[in-house]
Length: 135
Image (cartoon, rainbow, N blue to C red; front, side, top):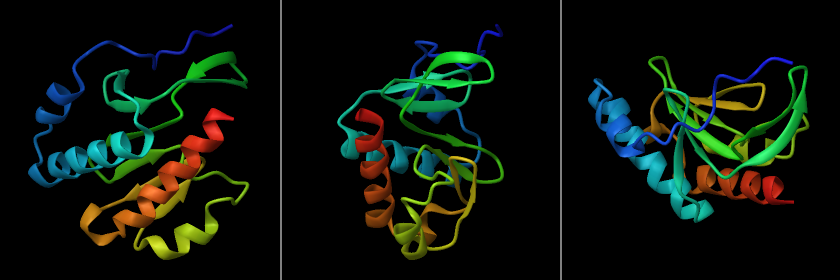
């Protein structure tokens, strides 16, 4: 069975965010870090080299049964990627319609500029995902 390479590292989340070269992406990462911390009341943990995750849950896929974070984000170059708030089953569709400009992928939400979306709606998406992940 393959070992996942994206695992908690113990590295400093704030230092990771402070190292982001693009000022806007860095500011967006700080803001979404605060939003998710507030919504989940969970500590942020760096997973791999570039994903900030909150909480832990077990899931099973083709690599077997693994630990993964419940919700998280990564300040990617093309977009701020938020994990766990969208899935193909549609429970977030009503909120996604109200969010503002974004795209989605499997279990991912992509936002080019945090200022362009409704942060209250984003917080609701995070809270829903957190509650699903705790069940």
